[in-house]
Image 1 (cartoon, helix red, strand yellow):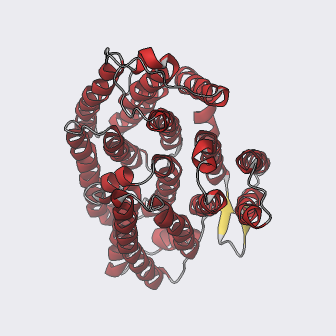
Image 2 (tube, rainbow, N blue to C red; image 1 turned 60 degrees about the horizontal axis):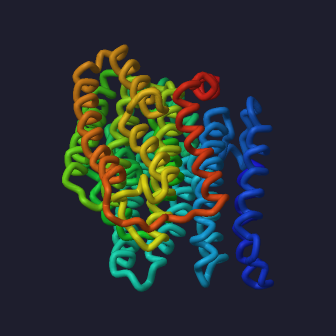
Image 3 (cartoon, helix red, strand yellow; image 1 turned 120 degrees about the vertical axis):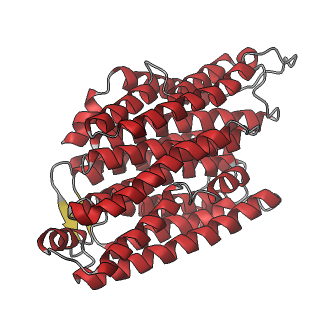
Length: 456
């Protein structure tokens, strides 16, 4: 819980920095503060503490997801340092990001449905503003409007689902709801309607097909740094919240669960096929990464339906995906900032950037020995053990499709474009890229620590 206080405090510190004109060094102060939050959340390991009348609970699963979000946030602030320094309202934007980050931490630690709603709203409201922060861009304004509209629409489904589940069980507390599900032989029909409505609402938040249509436009229209935040931190928080809800729904008796399982399997199949096929036809790398983000949700959903309440595979996949994604967006941001805006001939203009982008895309494609390969392998093995061989075949085919569109970008980087302009980066940027390279490769070669962490 102390980690959450630190992140909130950093948000207020950013606002105060504007008033007292202490903008210089703010990003470094924020990174140090988030590092302190990582240490504090690590100290809560195995304590399983609840706060505010069991509104939030920091069990080991919540601590693991919180630590992952905080670490990715450090990399994000490191990457986006130039973005903040170039903006006239630096402190406002950093404060909005930190408040959004606070909402993400609430989403992974909620133990009461009301706190889930609060976490989603705290996370989302800041992002509605940030998505449209490029006021001179029509695409950015459109992204903000679409994100707000679709986010509000999804929240309506979520609230109605929460209300129906409360009506059936008499509680907002997820543990008490789980007990009601296991002890009552026959729950009212509107309980299952509530589950479906919550499933739809959360499917919007994680951008699962067919509730994904907002994601490509919002990702493309938002500033690259904000898109990177949405694609990593927001995605982790939404999937972690979905995972926590799923472990409750998994307690539903098998005869009643079967229709819900069929719905989730259908969403999984669509989320595997649609974005991966659509990405083949994309020419904009930012939009391609948006469809890639949606497609990766399909593999995580496959882990859900095949693993039940086992979370180690989901955690490992999210770690591998978020590291590769933040690495890819780091390169994309640096290229856009250079003024060139093209990947053609990148290997000659900046070999380190080209190497990082290559490793990131190969990891997203699931090529060994990188983290993304082992993540997909673990999902496939778990699904085969659960007798979902048909879904595994579909997932393998769509993964091969992903290899095709990722390689289009890779080939472009190693082509001779005739442009000899060098993409410059600072020592800090080079250090960040080297660390991301090491993590993507290292976690692929030595995965035991992460899987043991979540299994605990």
